[in-house]
Length: 432
Image 1: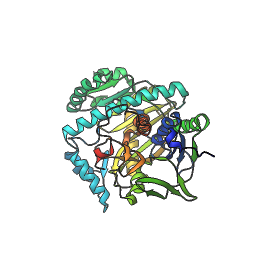
Image 2 (image 1 turned 180 degrees about the horizontal axis):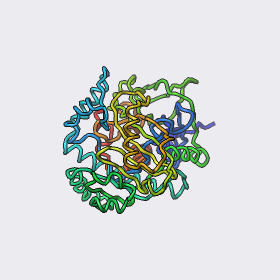
Image 3 (image 1 turned 135 degrees about the vertical axis):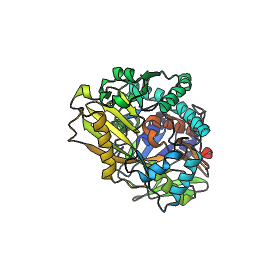
Image 4 (image 1 turned 45 degrees about the vertical axis):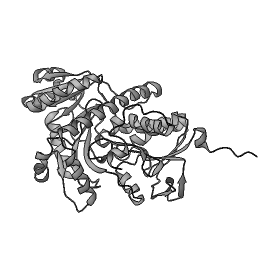
């Protein structure tokens, strides 16, 4: 009897994805459509229980500038000392935090920030096309809207810098316009309460919003029913086992889970999984907060997505609810809700849109965004482990970049040319 060749030689592989957040699910979608036998292992009982659960809700393809920028370093004393800063840094006896922090500071140059922004715009433009295709083909229901986005600015220097970026974004197909304060209010009357501090805004009419958790839950059902993807819920990965320059298995409580290829999409937990194998991922969690409130008065809630640049707070209408998100705290892997940080977010939201809700039913949440120092994700084969694909480091842009990141991974495993220029995203670009 003739022995059949391994599945990988025929082009169809057994692929195990670690993580059922938005990045893992989008990778599964791209790989399953390529005809691979895909399984996902997830430590939670369903999809999107961690960073994808209640993020800002914005699919922000045109606004991807990294946190690391030339204006960051002068603000660090305030982050350390001010209790109401939109960012908080608490030094810890954690070598990983200090290594990440030093690399982050090295990336805070005008040249590096500009280069990373341009790279991320390429990736986000790809994601936009893929999201549109997914919505059209699969009919996914996730409070999806294409009503645009308005970034409001409260000082002239920030407004001038935002207008300067519009020219480059136009070369990538972004349609934007700069508005003065009066035009901002005509476009979005619900911003009337913060009118005294408005200088202007940048309006991008084709930006989008949606409920990331609903997206993930719907996509997980589609993956199961239409593409035969197998999910292993409530299954934590305890260890990765390597042999002969390849990843052999993911060890779970029931034993070894083997595959031809693996995709690491485990968010903030990814670095800990690879560390015992001698791979040091430059990832650190940025803790973010959100709250979700029911909309009580339709005219008092923003119709389009709003980003308040001065307060580093985002607002997105998700059907009959409003999502408010903000903060970026470097405090380790602590996922507890700190009352003072939640109170700050509530105060900002109530000051901006006091009548949109009665504010008695606030759904609070916090999550860890897995970030690289530069802000660019790590996409590609892990050095020394040829069959392990990295799909990590999207930071606060996980929802926005997930579809493109998954496609990049699928193309790499298929041996196809990358769909975009990959400089800045490959593991070697991150020192691996």
